[in-house]
Length: 232
Image (tube, rainbow, N blue to C red):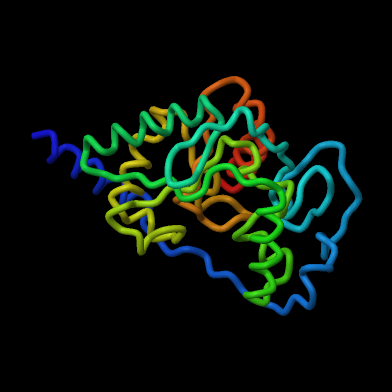
């Protein structure tokens, strides 16, 4: 029966991704509103490389720079969130397919401008007493967030909101469904467990369904693959 097959698929997905999320240490940040963006410096490099301590125009704590999507290119995907038109169409199609399987995908955060990201990054660091490098493990610095592009989205499960923006999202029906089916709609996980600089984010997906989006994320995709290859 179809529901049995889906249950088996999700069980396999859960077993393949089971584990604990890395913990984040905390330290005091004196004045995030006025502190410079970098607390570890290194000379700018011509070619970005995946180094968790590097802070330059080319990369920052393992994050890469991204342009903001023009407002005219953004389309609503519900819940007050928006994506670039092709990514939005794919997300809505994916959302409908999941609903047919009894899974309710909720768009939690799509496009973000630099001002919003500034508040999330520095405000979060101040509230949690994190250094900038520690904060970068769980949030991108402004100018370096995939959300700027309009191709990235944080997804939740309407039937399990307690898992929103939490590593245990992988255990929700939505999390397991995405692991199996997101690739069919052009989405891929940005920060897997193997990422050396950014904590595991099973809720954060980027769309790479056309040439422009693939070019946008080419450096991040290549650097992570290269690093994963060296770790094997």
